[in-house]
Length: 86
Image (cartoon, rainbow, N blue to C red; front, side, top):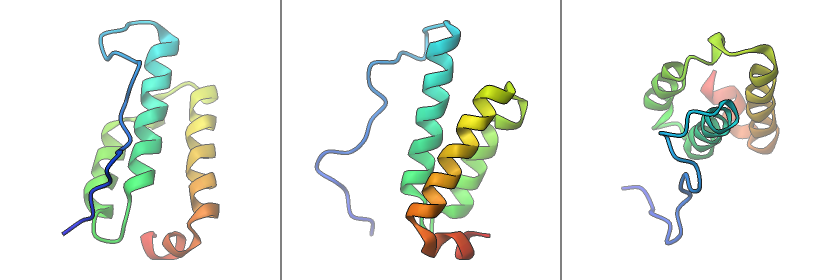
């Protein structure tokens, strides 16, 4: 069973109904961070599907660069998952 944090991370202050480009971009980047913050060896398959559902490959290059930056930052911080998750 997974340990549940007392103060879990949530998507606050951004509504999914907000149609502005900046709000949508921020929500997407938060979802990407969320996925990479909870990835483990046991959750990787499910989270890979969740990540692919975000369709980051269809994003403008500026946003895609931010997504890649999040992924690279996480891989540097959590090196043990780098090799195991590939």
